[in-house]
Length: 461
Ligand SMILES: *Cc1c(COP(=O)(O)O)cnc(C)c1O
Image: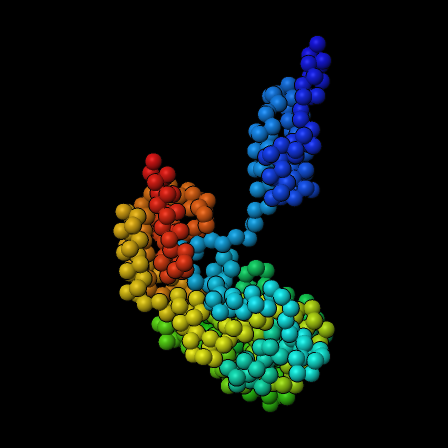
């Protein structure tokens, strides 16, 4: 008797076709396409069938079934890479995508990506050109280097340099610089991947010029490498020769010296109340034969690895097979050119978001924080610190004004903020939720305030 009932019930489950022929079904198919919609309908019907045969639950009406289908379709098609509001005060937040781009950079990317472009086409000759020409002139003009090459990111720049100049040969590096910068990037690992043999010198805290001299005398060294410590500081009983001294010793032995600057600033960070970071121009002037750095750290552009230096060495890199494997795409090249142009025109501080944030006037931050507390009718303004982040300027802080929110269970409230549209990323200190105006982009300010207000209202009931 029971089993007869069940088979009756199972036969009452609507078919895929009949659901797709309803108005709601047709609408879903129009939005999400036939294949995806059918898959979602099948999965929902399967679960209904399973419930019914276990005699748990009844057959929902078609509208209800299709609501479930819609939910699945939305889940499947929702992008996982989505914008967020960075209220952490960390300007170059690696987990949040490092550098936001200037409008000019974005529109340059859009212009060349929406259609065809001269990526590898020489218009005056009417034949094949080189993708490497697009940013080289700008980089040469800006840094004074003889030549330049742009690749996928700085990790691949280093991989290319080592593969081309030190494959199965020894590269000299000090133990004070054998860094891990996070995301699985370790200098010794990159070296072994490239086929370069690591010749370590010195100790963790101290290295001397004689260590360099002796190693060059004793071993068949091909390359001398210097790597920026990026995310930590060497303090206490320490010693390290300058880049210039290392370059001199390398050159006396006829060896090239490569300086991996990591962030690689074109502006003087000391002018912004930060410790002075070696600029790309200074690294070249100190005698580095090649200097490499990221496009999306202190440069403030799209992800890229930039190599500048001597013509012959750069040419050697360009011809190496690894160069093809790590080449930059048209979006990166177009975006990087637009960002570099800001520097060339002397408008970097005005146009590049991360430099706008670094140089933001404390008075302006204060007045934004004041407006926010007024709008939220809650929260207090406190003095705090923002960070540059992104593996640059470790330990360096910029004074800022924060809006501190007193809520129950602040860590849980952070989770609530991550559910906002767009999600808000904030931090907790001393039991208070802190939001830093410095890293909130002006166009996101409205959304931030509305979402904060809603979240607070929900939280406080
Ligand atoms: C960040 C960094 C890298 C890696 O740069 P990506 O552009 O992230 O690949 C390499 N070397 C140093 C010293 C760095 O700080």
